[in-house]
Image (tube, rainbow, N blue to C red; front, side, top):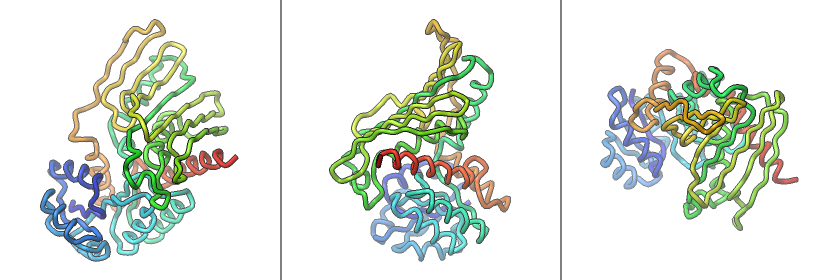
Amino acid sequence: MKIGILGAGSIAGKVSRTLEQMETIGCQAVASRNKEKAERFAAEHGYEKAYGSYEEMLCDKDVELVYIATPHSHHFEHMKLCIEHGKPALCEKAFCENAEQAREIMELSREKKVYVSEAIWPRYMPSRQIINDMLASGIIGQVYTLTANLSYPISHVERIIRPELAGGALLDIGVYGINFMLMHFGHDIERIESSVRFLETGVDADESITVFYRDGRMAVLTHSIFPRSDRKGIFHGDKGYMVVENINNPSEINVYDNGDRLVKHIDVPEQISGYEYEFLESADCIEKGLTQSRSMPLEESVRMLEIMDAVRKCWKK
């Protein structure tokens, strides 16, 4: 499948280094508002064509799937643009700024019968099923709580601190904590509580999110744009606990009993980077005529943004 990249920033470069190593994927075109930037990017990553406008690339008949790598503030606009041109799109997380935008994209995708999916990579990774199988096995007994954190020192990055670019911790990294919770605890949520600290620019810098489930389970998520955290996801059961190393790209899983003794260690399957899975699934879905992903259906992208909207509502109280 031939890929077009919309946006030529840092995430586009990381993804492209993975695409270069995939046998069934071709790097067809890259588009930037700056033609020279697109040309440099194309030369560096082996794209056949470089465009100085997004619309021009979307008219390229050889582009079969568009990867949207622009800031969060532009995802809604650029997904609509892809759908209007009949181009399947895989959009970087966070899918949109809010649930209202996500619902509109879902409805437009269905109306036009054009594939759209959110590129939140843990959804597509084999580790997702491994973790759920371990929880279902009862190895740590009845699970009561989940704690997960993700923080990176990214407060110097312009798009993170600027509200007009939909910056802040929640949309950039909090999305991973929420995603981790939903993948492994599900959706039957009773209530959400959250505390936040804002930057002077108005974007959220640090937050804690506590989610109470109707069956009595609880998830506690923390995110920040200042330190690098350990990035662990930990499930606590009455027979032990399970630690997932790096919730946004799991590397290993360790299970401990109540005496803190290691009872099971699992390494996740080898991979290029982890990005490859979302492209492999998208290519398969498009070839089969599907208009959304199996691993990340559009309803789930809407649901994630509904939770983020609820979190932000807590901050206004």
